[in-house]
Amino acid sequence: MTFVYDDQNIFAKILRGEIPNQTVFESEHALAFKDINPAAPVHILVIPKGPYVSMDHFCQEADAAEIEGFMRAVGEVCKIADVEGGFRVISNAREDALQEVPHLHFHILGGRGLGPILAR
Ligand code: AMP
Image (cartoon, rainbow, N blue to C red):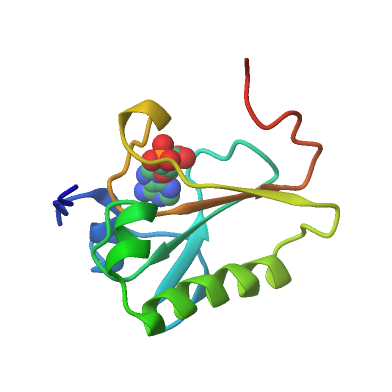
């Protein structure tokens, strides 16, 4: 499929410094910040700095340094956040998954029992 990135999405504005955020970690290739509407005691979003809509877009088109930088950022967030008891990573893509913001993001969720992976 063809991926079209909208640079007016809210995370693009956060990356440009146009909207404030609660940064947890930042590196050359990634930014991690607290979700504005947390679903768990730990709810951190990790985003790549490049213009990728979704996980499939990123994995198909990002270069090795971007992929390593993004995944290392997830590792750093897990060191900083209180997730010793466990955590869940979610990345919603497109309509079926109810993706709201069209810039790739990992939700890092933890700090309590999270229940089953999906409602049935
Ligand atoms: P998704 O449905 O996977 O696209 O999730 C988008 C997430 O972005 C939601 O959990 C929102 O609460 C979160 N969100 C939206 N705007 C902001 C913002 N300005 N700062 C932090 N998180 C945000």
